[in-house]
Length: 159
Image (cartoon, rainbow, N blue to C red; front, side, top):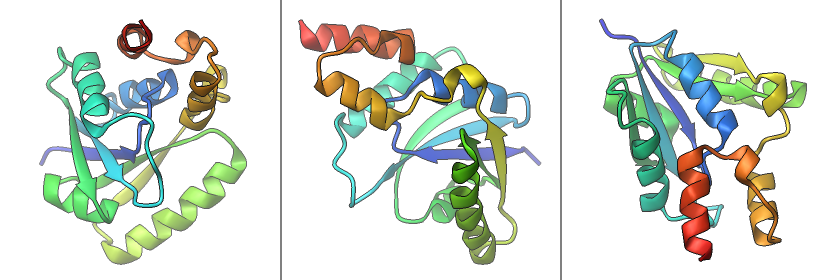
């Protein structure tokens, strides 16, 4: 049986922190499905199509990484793609407390799906999509926080 994991999030935009977690996950799983969740409570800065395009471009040479859009529960996304694992990145202790509560709820919804936590490398601790969006809104340089594909795309959008 293939070890398939879903890495859920909004990825608005995808950052070097996300890429680090995805790349490190590939050592643990046969396939990583990046699940771009639609959250009715969030108004994204970038379209779903743009985020999918970025992910496909970043991982165009890696058939073990796939990106999908999903509505509703992450557990349902896992069931649809045949994943038995959910990947979550942890930057701070309070991230763990929040993520553990979600993991416990997910386990109660489907005990066949396990959440795996990967801690963030120290150099990526402050990299968060929310902060990156704030820098973009205020005209700052986000290049150090983004994969090259995303940074180049944003430069073209500015021009």
